[in-house]
Image (cartoon, rainbow, N blue to C red; front, side):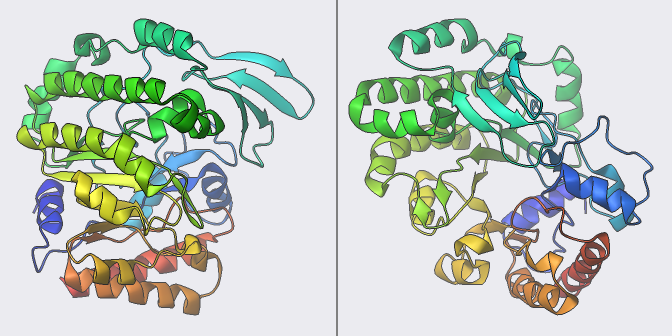
Length: 389
């Protein structure tokens, strides 16, 4: 059974199928620590990873495609992970990107503009998250300018030069292929354009601008994905909506229904009409209240189900038996002892017997997880997965 066949069978809850041996990803500091704790450095990383950088595992939709995040190949090789899934490398958001530039610097921090046009102040040692101070959209004029300069729906300019070669490869592929990913979503995209505070005010103070942005992005994605779908039939579509914190969603359910749901129904409906069958949304925090709304939008899968925010994948599966689930194993337990890890693996065992589940940690594995613990966790998880098929 190829990885693609395995993925499709898992998503259909077919019995007797070993789940994919994937992990979502790691902090850069985690990989550097593990190299000092016994992980063989055969491939290394293509460039030094800062403490808080993202390093992908084979299950991440952003380990390929436009985001081009570094991959922890040495971890995958040592633990015998399945080969990674791939994402169509379509520039599906701001393009061409803004030129990155340093705006200010002192002994401890650097303030810089990134490719998405956001300005942030970062610690040089990478010991904390960046503090964002500005975003590319401030008002209607800046939106119209951004749209004209960097959000034109010309798929030919947004696909790589070797697209014909990739099309031929995709038609013979043995791995699952995703479309969308990156900044595709109807809250996450707003946040990337306006920043959190400005978005939350705009829902009330500038409704027409929010509607205009979301309508335009929906049309934009349908246009550029439509060009891809003429050549390739992806297995899934991946969306990014980090729109919850530990106590619940960042916006009300009424705002979700008013602003997000109509566009999701339209976009997912278009993708489904063109052969895509599985739709996964990545949203952190406590997303209990969001699950039924995403299902109504047409989503079939969710991740990562952060335990520290009150998410329990056994309870989620009981409430939503046909929801495809990725993740949900408490990354904090991996830093403790084997008894704590074993308790997390009991949750995996329940879902593995039910199907429709890809077991992984509930987000990036942090640097306080010892390499020895991680190996114990993955070896035992693999054994449980093999027994469950």
